Every structure is written in C-alpha cells, then in structure tokens.
Image (cartoon, rainbow, N blue to C red; front, side, top):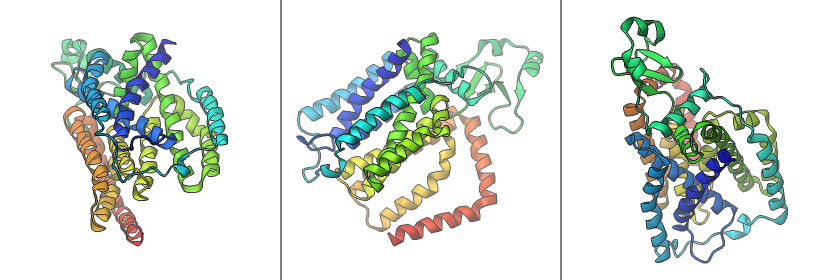
Length: 401
C-alpha cells in the first residue's frame, strides 16, 4: 500500500502544476474535457520531472527539496490565475463538440482502466543484475538516497591496483571511462572511486521521486517498479486520443483495446525501463502536434504541450537524437510558411529541453553519451543515403501540404 501511495503522491504536484500551466491557455468559464485534462497532466509530469532533474544535476535532490522548489512556480501560477492574467487569449475558444465524450465512451474508458490496472500494475521485479531494468531501478534509488548523479564508491577508491585489475571490466573503446564497476556504472576516476551512471536521466529521476514518496527501502523499490504501469496507461491514452482525433470515437476505442491487449504493451508495462515513459511522451507529442498544426483551439496549448513532450523525449532516451533532423525539417517548413507566435510556443520549450539533454550528456553522462553518439555517426556514415532520401521525402510532403 505504501508503494502505491508513492506513485499516487507523484500525481498530486503533477496535477496541480499541470492544471495551472494549462489554465494559462484556457479561457475562464469554459468546461474542461478529457483532451485538456490529459494535456494538463502531461505538462505537470514533465514540469515536476524537469525540476527534480535540475535538483539531481546539482546534487541536492530529495523529495522535501523538490516540494520546496515547486512552491515558487506553483504559487506564481496560482496568483497569476487568481488575478486573471492566465485567462487564455480572448479570441481563443475550445471546439468543445468534438472533444466532449459520449456516455458510452466514458463507460468504455472505465472498463478499460480497470483492465489496465490488472494487466500493467503487476511489475517484473528487476532489482539488480546486468539487465537494463535493474540498472534503472538501482539508479533511481541512488539518486533518491544520495541526491544526484555523481557517485563516489569508497570501496573502489580503497582498492589496490591489482584488485581493480581483477574486479573491473575493461572498456577499451569507451571515451572518458576505462572500465565498468557494476553494470550501468562507468568508472571515470579509479583513484577517487568516481562512477558515472549509464542511461539518460528523466526516467530514473521520476523513479527517485516515487522512491522518496514511498519512504525508501523495499516500499520505495516497489514504487519504482509500479511507476512503469502509470506510464504505459498514460501512453495508451495518448495513442487513443491520437486515433480518436484521426478516425473518430469508434476508431479510438478499437485502437485502445488492440494496443492494451498486445503482448509487447503488457511486457513493457511491467518492465521498468524507459520504453513506457517514451511511449507516453512521444505519443503525447504526436497527438498535441496534430492539434497544433490543425490550429484547433486553444492552439497555443497544443503547441506548448507538443514542444514540452517531444523535448522531454530527448531527456529520456539518447537514441531519440536520430529524430533531430526530422524536427529540423518541420521547423524549417514552418519558417518558410511564415513563422507565427504559435510556432514559438512549440519551438522554445522543445529547443530548451533538447539543449538541456545535450548538456547533461556532456557533463554528467560523458562515457555513455559519446560512446552512443560515436556509434551513431558510424551508422550514419554507412546509411546516410537513406536518411537523406527520407528527409527529402518529408520535405516534399510538407511542401505539398
């Protein structure tokens, strides 16, 4: 029960922050609906996770520190809303007819949620070992217990050179690191026992939040494992909303049911790696980008959610860097069509988060970052004609639109 409480407590600051952020774009007096509520929750999760990430990068993360850090922006947004500044653009209205769900849709979603809770919230208990899932869980606990990404192991520092040669796994082709100490933890300074964690930071930071909310220890680890179920539920909802916008309510319901019952979805819903969080953020970005490009109102909200969601993907997975040329083509297309204020609501948060991810890679995850990016350039040297052809095809498609 305490583990579940840790996950639920994450949703409290995320919901409050997200509602206040989304309210900036929504005129007063208009009813909220499922799309605006989902957009608010996505914004809240991203913002809370980003603040926690900054604290961890500074080495001062803890749940109390996170709550204190959220007081200022939440207080500012609340005061802004209370004074009427965050009432949305006067000309903005929400096209409510297509966004209001019929009664049968609410019933369907209630039944689906009950089934999803049963399917996804029985996690695989990967706690230690060489698998990626165990590394993520260990890293989340490490951040929660010691406040950041810089790990110093006193036992490693006290080892003799002969013992290190016997214990450490050499990594001759990895920049900025000569060896592994444990799976997922590079040795960047043997003399001081400095270790640099593998993987990108947003997923383990969110795991650290629920670990702290659950009180640490075994309940905290269990909360980390349960968190993946939350991301896969939100990811499925994002896919549902996308399909509903494209094909209507029946199409959305069929896609949701098919996705929920697929073997891969169930597997990654119980497997505590970053795939579930990536699905949530990527599809939240795709869904809101479609609304932004169609200029559904409030269009600024959809552009902002899309920029934040897509940008956050770059803080979750390093391999998302392959998407940068695609976003570059899209932004160039928007520029050639005549840059609008709406485009800035997308481009600014997207650019800030992408730059943040690159800075994190350089300063706090250099071995993993440069090894992976180097391998990516090797592949690019072999496959560049396919990339060029794909980008040209995308450019032609956008020009046709």
